[in-house]
Image 1 (tube, rainbow, N blue to C red):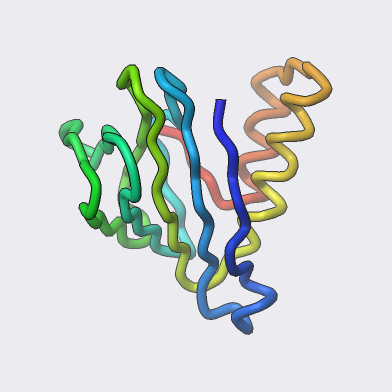
Image 2 (image 1 turned 60 degrees about the vertical axis):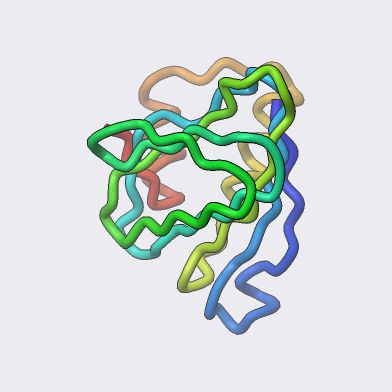
Length: 131
């Protein structure tokens, strides 16, 4: 399971960037490979170890590591370790990612199961193309 803390949303930064703290429990997994057409994403590991996929290979990122993914860059991340991990995620420009994360949390909280068409529609609304 994960916890997202909305540090600075796009609405607070005049759309310049969005900054989130992403905390993952041990063995929490993470999103499958995907890309975003309209914004870049960057990760800065605060605690633990995070595995990040760069479109070609998985790399282990530790405390203090910074990884940048440009628009259109395929990426994924996960916590596959037996310890908790956390990182900052920066979106630029400030796409309204908080709506996406809130919607995912609501789906999880309500124990809803989405079908393939529902996932496709959700991803399309939030500029998340799964590969």
